[in-house]
Image (cartoon, rainbow over all chains, first blue to last red; front, side):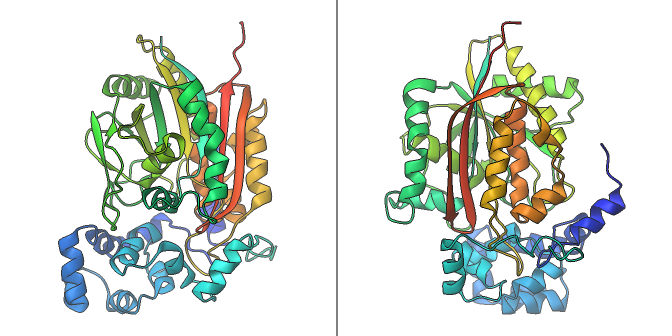
Length: 134
Length: 284
C-alpha cells in the first residue's frame, strides 16, 4: 500500500515537540551534521576545543547555526536541520552523557529529567498529535 | 544446508555497552536489565550455539555520514572493528564476518529485487556490538561470525515495516539456499520506545511496546502494516528502530514459538526489551 508523499510528510509535522529528520531537514542541515561528524576524529576535537569559532568558520554553515553550536542550543540546531546522532559528537566532545544532553532540549533540569525516566518516562498521553490534541 | 534456527529482537542502547565495559552490569540500576538477559545468554551458550548471526541494526553516524544513506546495506567483509563514537572504541573483540554467506545473501537478495548496498569495509558501532555483549557477555573472541545488515532508520522516509518483513522473508530463502551446513540466527535490534530529541524527549510507552511484542508472537503478519506515523506518535522519534525487528520476524515464517521475553524501563532514555523466537516447522 503506497502512501501519498504529501500526506506522509504532513503527518510527520503533526507531532508535538518533535522534529522528524525528513529529507528537507537533512538537506538544510547537511553541513551542520558534517561539521558534527568531523568531531569523530580526536585531532579535530582538539582543534575545535582550542578555538570553536575559528573551527566553525571553516564550515559552510549559517551564522545562526554557528551561534547555536556555540550556545549548545540543541533545539535551535534541530530546527536548522541538525540530527541528534550527528549532534551527539558534540555531546561526547563536551564529555556530556547522552541523556544529560538530551535533557537540555526539554523544559526540565537534568535531575528532574532523570527522575522522570526512573518513574516510567514521559507519557504519550496528549503528546501524540498537535492537531488532534490526544 | 544453512538454516535460520531462531530470531532475537533486542534493544541496543549504548549505555548498556558502557555498563558492560565498566563492570556495572550488576549494580542497582543495570542489574534488573542484565538479569532479564540471563536466560537468553545461557540459551545462546549452552543450547542454541549459532555459527552465524545476521545482525540487523542501524549505524548511528559512525560508518556512514550524511553523505551516503543506504536504505539496506549488507556487510560482505572479513572483519569489522568497533567504531570510535567519540569516547574511543569499545574494548570488545573485533567482529568476524562470514563473507561467503554474506555475498551469497547479497546476490540472492538483488536477484529477488532488493537493491542492496554492499559494504566491504566499515567500523561497527554500538548498534551492533551492544547486542553481542548482551547475548554473549565478555568473551576474548565473539563465539559467532556476523553478517551485518544496516538499515536507514534515521533519514525519512525510512523503509516501511512491510518492506522490512519482505526483506526478512527473502533473507530466509537466501540462507536456505546456501550449501554449507550452518546454524544461523537473525537478530533485529534497536528500540523499544524512546525519543532522544526536542521538548518531547523521554517519551516511553510500555503498553504499546508490549503490544508490539504480542504481535511478533502472533500467527499472522499484521505487525508489518503498522505505519511510520504510529511508531512516531506512540513510541517516540527513535522508536522507529523497531521496524528492524520485522526483518527478523519476517525471516522466521508464519508461526513462531516464544522462548523468552523481557521488558524493563528505563535504561538511559530508552525502554529495554528483548524477545527470543523460534520458527515453528511444518511438515508440508
